[in-house]
Amino acid sequence: MNRLAQTALLFLLGATLLHAGTTDLYLRYVKEGLRPLVLLAGAVLIVTAAATLWYDRRGGPAHDAHHREPRISWLLTLPVLALILVAPPALGSYSASHTGTALTKPFGFPALPTGDAPLHLAVADYAGRAIYDDGRALRDRELKITGFVTLDRKGAPYLVRMGLNCCAADAQPVKIALTGNVPPVLRPDTWLEITGTYTPRRTKDPVNDGPIPYLEVTTARPVPTPHDPYDETWNT
Image 1 (tube, helix red, strand yellow):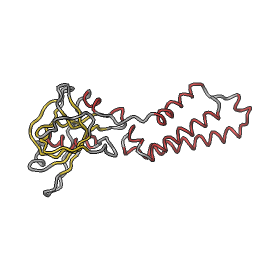
Image 2: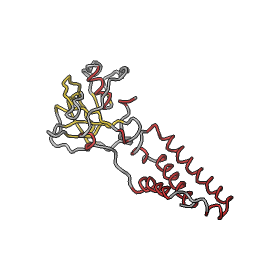
Image 3: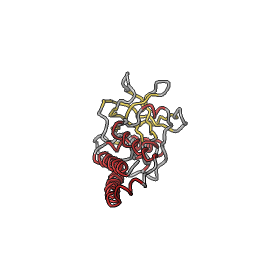
Image 4: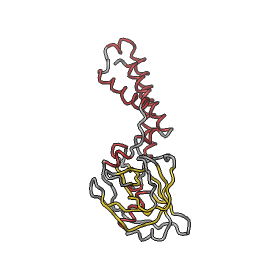
């Protein structure tokens, strides 16, 4: 690889990262809070490409002919092609059904809004309060929770959100088991907004025996995939 090819690849990779960071594409790979680092990495690569080109022009053709980069540098084309040609969907029911719930006990439970309006909760927030706080703040409240559907090997339905520590490679699910007025036909990966109430009923995840709370379903309606399909509530 000569310096001209190296410069072109660095610029293309940097531009691709900037494109991912200025759109929702980066959410397929890393958590939302890492957007500034994605943008910074793209900017650094573009500046590096410009500096490499400037250095090469100062060195002249003879300099380039005697200082070629190793052929392994062509591996830089792989992340570029992956970002440009492959836009993987967010992890869904397959990953959730093969991974045990990652619910962990939080440090505390912030006070919830009062009133008669439905209480909107994240999957991890409901699961944490139901398991580790015995649903004290959830009783006698109408709840709205959004997640995607996954089914276990016996066909039992769960409402799930995947949480990230850093990136999609370490994504883990938090699950809520559904009971009550559950739709008779549920397709995996369907996003639902569930309206329901707290129930003390619990079960164990068939994958890792982790605790899973139930939610008593009143109504369920399909909703579009959210802007950020991952849930960072459980690891904050």
